[in-house]
Length: 140
Image (cartoon, rainbow, N blue to C red; front, side, top):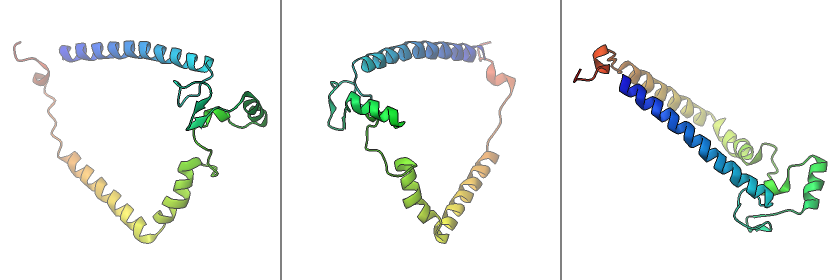
């Protein structure tokens, strides 16, 4: 048990140090990107942008912020016409029409019930071995 606790403590300390150093490095990188007026999807390219996401002029950015719209430089892809975005469009126009069909709905319910049954059956097959001897090393 003490070896597990030492391993866990060492892991927590190493994760803390990793987060401290890695987050600081990425925050510095992002600050340099913002200062260099580079957009976030292609930070290594000059301010003029890349083919996938051209940089909007300062006038367009100011005009968009006055109208309450999103910053055009932060939109990597063209904005979706659907209020829910690309995912909302897919769910409303492609997925939902299929799921409301009775055969598809019945299949989904049966698959979920079968998965639930298999998980419940496997939970009954678990073996519990919680004796104190399991935590004591053999050489002591």
